[in-house]
Image 1 (cartoon, helix red, strand yellow):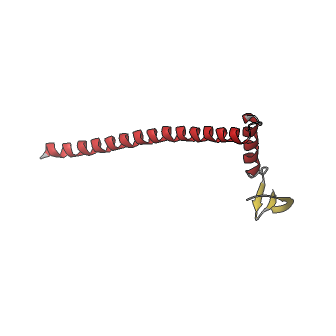
Image 2: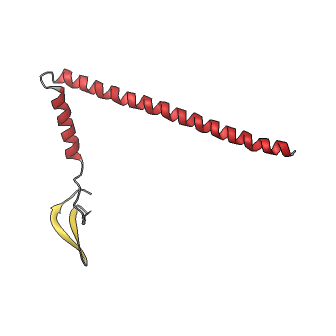
Image 3: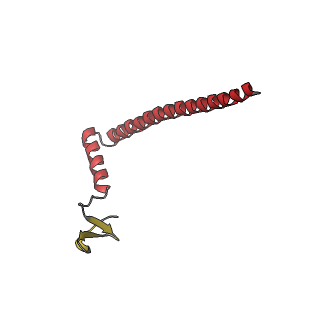
Length: 105
């Protein structure tokens, strides 16, 4: 009876480690496949851009896309400033004071 008790935890540990290894391998395969799919979509988008705008160099299209993405991101606030209800506030010794600029929360 004592030897079968020792076998139970060994089997349980083996099943757990086997399942963990399988999960890790699956995640690795899906990560590689997802990365390849994203690169393929980017290449397809660039090919479409070349077809739509053959006179514009692809580097210029890429730069415009990156500039548009950067413009869409909210701008960071300086240290000690916070955005509250679309207004910028600056921290002072005894509280907060409103700054005249607006912000995006």
